[in-house]
Length: 123
Image 1 (cartoon, rainbow, N blue to C red):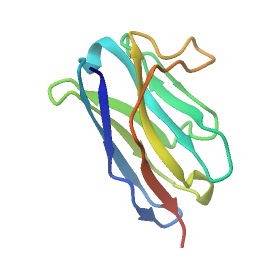
Image 2: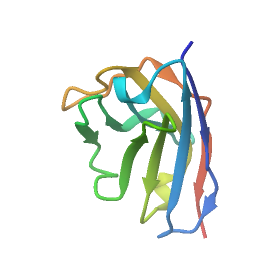
Image 3: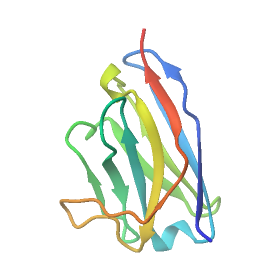
């Protein structure tokens, strides 16, 4: 049974950094596409980053250069490093996964989701 558990959400000031963690079980992260989606208040969930099993990545423009998704095969964990945070990044962040590939170069594809962790960017 695939399970994803996020941690690391917090209140952070604009311009600050934060790293989210996702503990995976029921599969090995190096054989799945893994990534992150988020839902801001009053908005729909949006996929914004992922890394497929072949290490190819996809990021939406709004986070490109600021956010980095990575995995630790030994710990079977996924991470999201977020730098230069902005108030618009405020959202609930969900870890997500899909067997082998999570993007086709343009869109994100996920089948499994965690329960989310809150990130608030505010002074």
